[in-house]
Length: 341
Ligand code: SF4
Image (cartoon, rainbow, N blue to C red; front, side):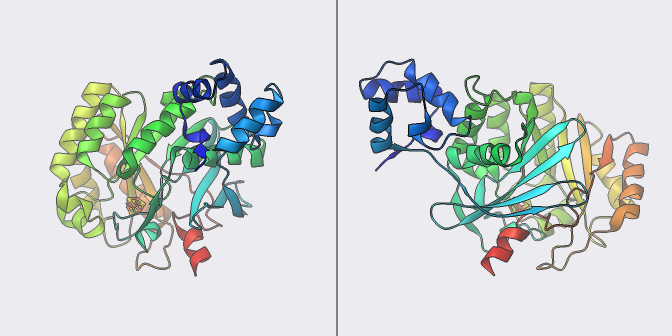
């Protein structure tokens, strides 16, 4: 079986290159070609013909297949549906912000966390993505748009901490100077609240931003929306979040999708403000995109503003997320679902 060369760290690539009788420095050359979006060993022009042929026989360069692109006419948000080797599909999103270009990547095909409001949960988990499948979402988008990606958020389909080892490898790969050289501070990982992994991640990558999909002010509502809350209840989750901010010195983002009649009342906002009062945090209020397969509706911009005002009046840093790509299938998992149907 051929080796997945794009999943190798620079150190692993050096060992691999030496193991086939080549000089160690060749690894840096190969590594930097991979991050320039080269998919064919033959195009690595500073390698000898012999080495190119050798690599071609024993290794492959992961390449995602672009199945579909939707571009928003309003804000140039581009949503990609990529095909994987095993026939499954994943989504990624390219967004333009004032502070730079952001790509939201998937960490799994499907997801087994079963959140009730999420289209990605329908159908369960298909597979964990390899490091190269995560990396190539970014490379393929840079190539397609011709634009540099400044920020990466691991917030697409899947629970990143349910694919922890590959997630960590992905972060190391895109941070490597000879490759994408992405600053750790420009990477954000979002979790639904796998407590043991939050602790581990704080130690492994204290500089990477952490976001928590919270979506509720108490256990009763959260357990209904997110089954993970029955295993890791909110008080414990918030305690660990507080510890995380103390260890890393970095602010946590809480994602809160407003769902009409479920978690969007003034009482909900006050209860949330109370629960978060001792945590260095920011609340990102998301007016929920309609998920047609589910019975949930967003409360709209006005109710988001009221909710946001209550949080800020109670001392919590909060903003309403700009609705990028509202004219395309912007909610996680929707494009993938349409492909399946
Ligand atoms: S919200 Fe995130 S963790 Fe929950 S089912 Fe969807 S992808 Fe999985």
